[in-house]
Amino acid sequence: MARITVEDCLEQVPNRFELVLLAARRAKQLLKGARPLVESDNKEIVTGLREIAAGKVRLRYND
View 1 (cartoon, helix red, strand yellow):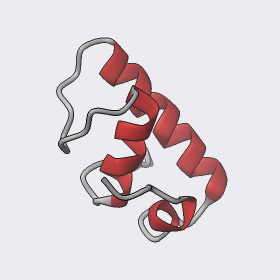
View 2 (cartoon, one colour):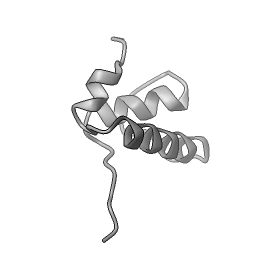
View 3 (cartoon, helix red, strand yellow):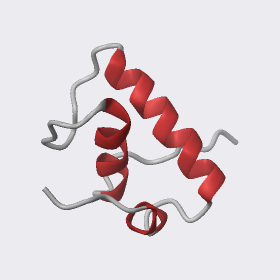
View 4 (tube, helix red, strand yellow):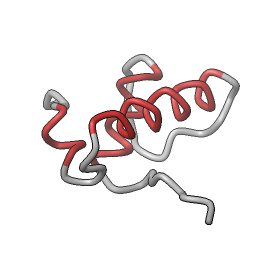
C-alpha cells in the first residue's frame, strides 16, 4: 500500500490545523468502533488520513 502524505490530505483540507483536527476526530471515531470508509490494515490515525486523502471525510462548518 502506498504511503499517505500530508500533501495528499492538504488537497482535500487546505488548512494544516484543520487537517490535524479532522484526523484526530476521525481517529477517535474509528477507535470507538466506527466503520472505516477505505480499506486499510493500518492504525486508526493512518486510516483516518487515508479517508481524508480519498475525499471520504470532510470538515463540516457550523454557521
